[in-house]
Length: 226
Ligand SMILES: [Zn+2]
Image (cartoon, rainbow, N blue to C red; front, side, top):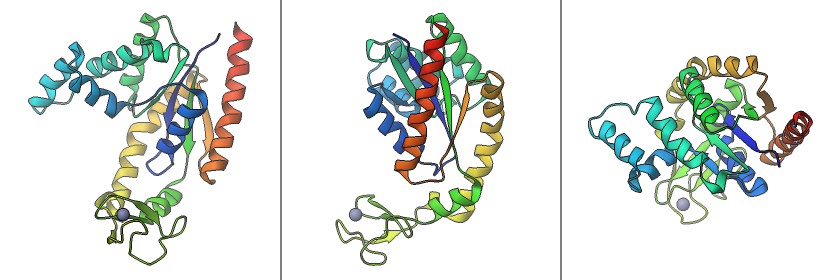
């Protein structure tokens, strides 16, 4: 059976997390949001988790090879034998190269990189319209999922606010960071013919359907090379 080893890319607000979780359910592959992996490795005190913690405790960035090691531990586990979905890593070209080297060591390859594309205007509309409840973090959206009463959480009646992350200048900064870091990565995977663009502009259902079609094509291609 051919594997389906995937990386998800996309700007903040592209619905990448939602789609990743859906994919996990549909494909029954583990979905690794990589920030979580590192935290889990630290919590479970694996060798790499302990190493990562040393950097974190000193206030240093955890080096790429340590992160790749932690991800390698997961990828090499039985749950990921038929495939996996990575989100949040790689973020840079050197990280992508480190991931390649690790996969090669494990005798595996990436089958595809899904870019859930949304332009800056769309991202600003999506993130800027979010309202989060102060008590429990329930999320609404002024256009897509409005609360029954303006500024009030449907679920617990607490106040809805714009999180700092969703304020216009912060959104602009996040987008800037995203473009600066991710564009070279998009090019990197495009050159390797791994990149598949999915229009992230539709509803979650429409985006999921587009991803499904893309994966079906990838599977055919993977089957064709065996
Ligand atoms: Zn609430």
